[in-house]
Amino acid sequence: GENVEQHPSTLSVQEGDSAVIKCTYSDSASNYFPWYKQELGKRPQLIIDIRSNVGEKKDQRIAVTLNKTAKHFSLHITETQPEDSAVYFCAATLYNNNDMRFGAGTRLTVKP
Amino acid sequence: GAVVSQHPSWVICKSGTSVKIECRSLDFQATTMFWYRQFPKQSLMLMATSNEGSKATYEQGVEKDKFLINHASLTLSTLTVTSAHPEDSSFYICSARANLRGQTQYFGPGTRLLVL
Image (cartoon, rainbow over all chains, first blue to last red; front, side, top):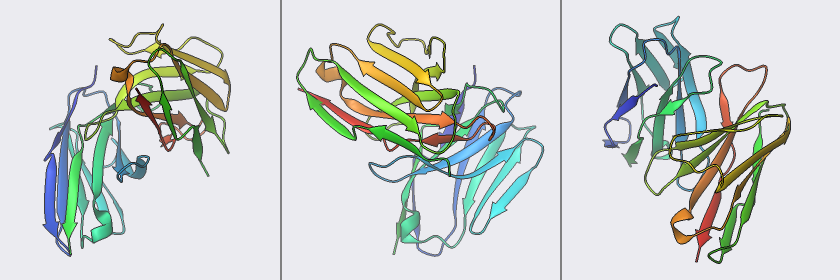
């Protein structure tokens, strides 16, 4: 089955700086990669996702890049704000497949 | 759209009792729902996949007789923790996948279970 590794486990940045979180996956057949943001005690919220037919996707301050050859994908947050502080999870799966596997999570802290 | 509710939001029970958690998709139909368990500062661990009208598929190491899952309709799945013990204390989160929206999973708010 799929195995997803996520780095770093914690990340602290100054407000306004950029933050990058990286994930690798093991199953070359995986073709759907969502990113979730989870604030303390709350539900994970989908913030962006990408399918394997594209290499990059952007939504305002958030972007995701995918390298299928190397089997890794990254989340990029620009102009970080204190409200971006949360735990971020990456995941990988086959589209329309039930077997979605999550990374271990990255705790992002944005210092004002 | 794509709202998932979960009830109760938290529960405290005595050891040996059973606890039922409901997961509902409010504005969409979900043939597939997922149950996760999350320990403090850890990732989401898939427990089982719940399919409407059929038996749930459990992940390796999850006792199906202890964590009973029923997916009675396209909008409701329930997880019953039977004979709960303190080690079952955790944050349980469900998610639902909308039939017509591909692979995106929408999560419920979670249920915090504390077994005394």
